[in-house]
Image (cartoon, rainbow, N blue to C red):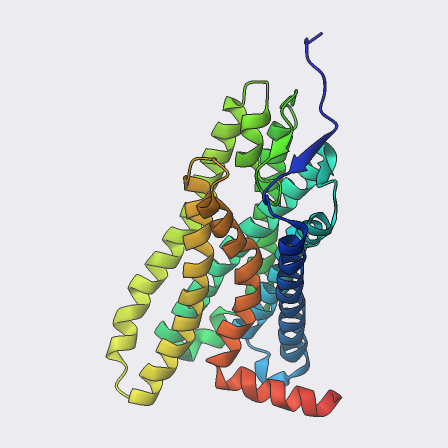
Length: 305
C-alpha cells in the first residue's frame, strides 16, 4: 500500500480578490458567455436555415460555431459558479472529465481549422472543380474524422493521466482543470503522462498547423495570379477571417502549453483567450467581414422575428 492519503477534490485558486471584485468578474464573464452562446447559436441557425449558405465553407463554419459553444461550456459555467461560491472546489472525477473535454474540443477545433484551410485551398485553386472535390460525403467525413481523431487523442491522454496519484497538495492555480496544472500536484511519476501529452500535442496540433501553413503557401500565389480586383479582394477576405481565427486559437493555445506551469497572470490570460474569449469572437470574425453571412442573418431574422 502506498503511504499517502487520496485527495477527493481540488481547489481552483486562480483569483485572490475581494467579494466585490469577484462579483464584477462574474458579471463580466457571464456577459461574455451569453454573447458566446447567442452568437454561435445564431450563426448555426442562420447557416442551417438559409439555403444560400449550404456550401462546404459555411458547413464547416457551422461546425466551428457548434464546437466553440461546446468548448466554452466545458469551463465557463464552473468558473462562474466558483466566482460566487465560498468553496471553490471540483471533484477529482469532475476535474478529469474537464481535462478530457477541454482536450477533445480543443483538438477538434485544431483539426477543423486545418480542414477549413484545405477547403479554402480547393475553392481558390480549383474553383471549377470545387463542388465535385468538396462533396457532401467528403465534408461529412472530414468533420467526423476531426471529432474522432480528437476524442481518441483525448482518451489516450486521460487514460494515462488516470494513473496519477494526488496526495496532500490540492490547490490548482487556474480557473479550470488542464493536464499541465495537475502535474505539480501529483505525488507519483508524471513522466508517462507528460510524454504522452507532449507527443500527442506535437503530432496533433503541430501537424494541423503544418497543414494550415502549407495550404496558405499554395493559396497565396493563386490569389496573386487572380486578374480581377474584386475576385482577389473576395479571396483575401475569406482567407483573412480564417487566418484571424487561427492566430487567436493557436497563438494563445500554444503559448499556454509551451509556458512552464507557474500560475502566473500571463498563463491565465492565454488560457482565458483560447477558452473564453476566442469562442465569443469567432462569430464576429466570420460575420462582420462576410456580406453573405450578414445578408443571410437579415433574411433569417425577418423570417423568424
